[in-house]
Length: 134
Ligand code: ZN
Image (cartoon, rainbow, N blue to C red; front, top):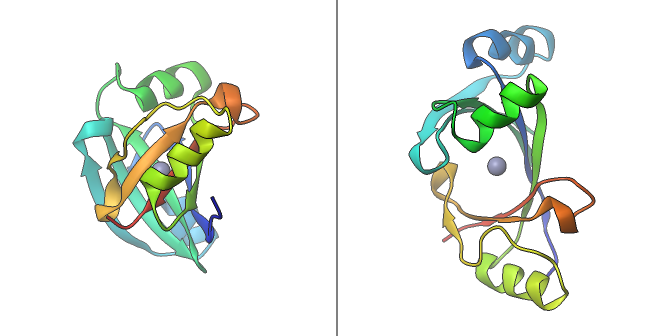
């Protein structure tokens, strides 16, 4: 596997409405999309920074993965996502290298991308996402 760049950094927030002004008014970025990802029980807001995006995640369900994270930690950095050419190939290679997977096959993420998560137990405790075009 050879990621081409950091596609995005995922940051969990209690409220998009409360978090967006920091990114827009202080950092001077523009929120260009808000999208609900039902499968992950989140509403996302995106900001472009060079080749990389900031993905803010607000939970739509307290029992969802981000809901639990926010309850435990109050929010904060949630995951890092690397862009790869072929997500299935990349997770197969990670598994072959002994990495524990959360997703054995890619699923749908925001912005029409295919995504898969590697388990934090194998990634120095940083939830790691691989994403790519379908
Ligand atoms: Zn993500």
